[in-house]
Image (cartoon, rainbow, N blue to C red):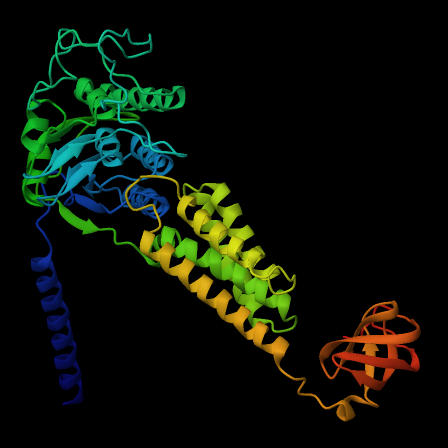
Length: 503
């Protein structure tokens, strides 16, 4: 009977295991002919392109390579971003052993400015209906780049435009882009307007060459690439398809993978044919690292960390031994410095902010009747305004935040000045009798008047005999806020062996 029961248990266990295996097999996607089902990794760009996006995309492409994915779908919806981060992302795409399909989606999305460069770098470009791309004119640091087609850059009547690279192109050479109306800047025979300064002209030409090189590498329309940089031209999805800027218009992922299947793309090591129809899509989700970088590299957060760090160190300097302000300030300042070194920072703004905080701090130790404090508030606000001197979307400090910080700093400064002014007219609260006979320690060498530490406070003191730093003194009398002291013992030896104030 026992043997029969054991055999029945074994058979039951085997049946359960086989049933689970069959159920799992039914739940798995059916593999395609010639091997296992292909996998496509989905990466996403949303919002401004910066260091966090760069880190996420580089790791996502490496993950796709490690998983031997059939392709990467890069879903794009961005108003633009930083040039350095964009170029790093494009380098990773160009070096990727896995084909990258750039897809401007969902409907209503855009690949503006930096997004256009990334879409051109992808091995295959696609857009969803009701999306757009273009407006890739670079914005220079240190001031707004004059718009190439604006009146301030256009040749005036009867004048001869200067001979610069890129001028002289007209519609007889390349034609007006489909979908664009003929304007004053595209009339036949009219020279292309130039930028107003050499640096802006240099930046625009560099961007033109970069985007044209990507267009030529992928076999896409290079004329629009140049027009998008020089004149901030844009295209809808249908126009982009007709003009050979993208290869696919897809409403959803299944449509995208179906249309991409069988197309040949050129990787760094040679051409390959995409096999994406029916592929399993896995999303490479952002992790804590991306979230942390996104927070730290947010200009508003970096700005607040910078101020918190400076104020913390300032408070630690005024109250040595408090520890907490110094520790918090040091951590905030280090985090701010990390964020600032990867963001487009105007270091003149950083210097002005530091100067403003320093001036407000000096106001409490140097009698200037408010001049230093007012100058500090002005320097703080001006430095904040030019800290991130760029028009790149998503990489500026909101004016409301700067205004709030300026008002808060001014109110705090005025409040402290009011408290200090009131303390000057207030009667001394310490009775003279309570101080007489107390022990004090000299914190400096002095003859006549100097400073001593008594009961944890620093007081002015007078002595008719020379006093050494660390000398033990005794209070004989008190005249207002000045203590009259005399020797009470030898100088106190500190741990270093030198004469000084005991720790």
